[in-house]
Length: 571
Image (tube, rainbow, N blue to C red; front, side, top):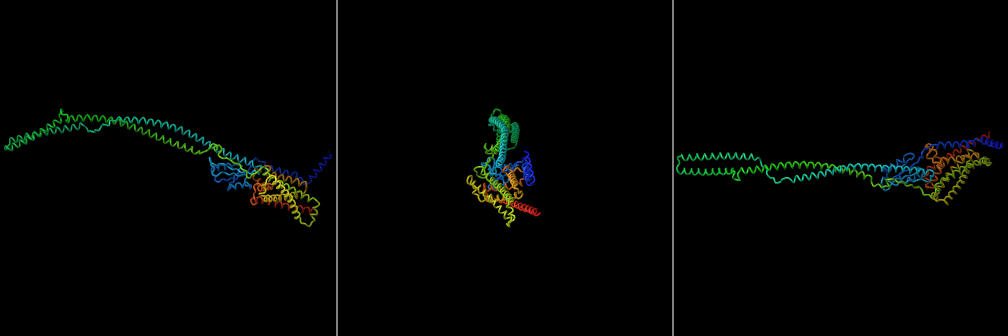
């Protein structure tokens, strides 16, 4: 046991003397855990971007969009339905939501289409659940609003109907009273004596005037008799001839007869024994006028009562009209409120809008979605490990001396090593694509050249990255350990294990340049969505820029290392 302990101590001492071993074995894992802690040490929600589109944005559509805009979702309006779907395919959004044009409660088409990218396996179901829950929550809010509106209108209708019933009772009583009083008025009018036709002045005044006239006539008759007697006396005492005297006597007798005739006529007019006398006529007229006055008083009283009855009837009719108007207004308001509900069916009340989940692309199994990630993992590990190990083995082999004294430029050796490693990785790529096409799915053929170009570019980057690791660490064991740790860190800070959408925004902007994330995104868009190279130019340029940076670092470190070694050998 003592020897085992001594040997373990020797091994540890040898390893600790190597600074690169200490960095790779101790500091690099600590750095990975530290960065992972900074990135994932939070409880923030996934930051999900939602691309939305509608042919006509209504108030109901905007209410759903406002609900989606709440954290952690962010909405971006697309210009068309195709643009909305393309935003998901090229990675500008995680999902696409298409609302029907002019969506409204009770509409014929209230189906909301949700397009999910199932190729993003670790986030697709999270996006689906979050988005569906938001839409379902808003749908329940609308349903609750409609229900509350219906309950409010039902309560209003109940109150208004109670008032209208009271008004109807009042109107019913008024109509009954109108009928009763109208009957009474009719009876009063029917009882009127319509035979009265006279309208005389004061009989006493007429009688007085008639007697005054009789007295005047009597006086005139007496005076006439006196004048005739005086004329007779003059004739008798006068000196007239006999013929003249006879003539005057004859005239006297004629006038005397006339006066006596008038006197007899007047006396007969006022005689009580004659039915047609003035006294009897005045007496009959007085009786008729008294009857007329009596009937007139009765008629006046009856007409006054009828006027009061008709005034009461008019008031009741006015009250009935007002009640009817108020009842009409109330019923019209009730009808308006009921019509505002519209033709809402029970299903629309329970679920004003429905969500239809759709996949961006057709697939037969989960392998269709996992394949781009598997390709990226294989290319990354193959490129990094192969290039790093080849560089370290060649650098530590006796062939390194022959390369250093050879007249061939070092750039030629670098290009040859690069192309050799790239060729080996390319063979692996062709084998994987052939197996996938032959046994699993044939969608690769539709975008084969784009897929191959992306695979070669990704392989070239990771070959350069592996060479950089080899030139930094140089020891075979340390290089393998560093390659494994660095590759694992690239996997850790990607969507493969944990969605990076819940990482803080500042860190997320840096992690988005993870070459493994870029590789998976490019392969996924080329294989699953058949996107052409021009559409992928932004990510391609980013990956090429990272490759240039890695190449520049390789040249700087290689030149600095060789210069330091050459200087130390000369000294």
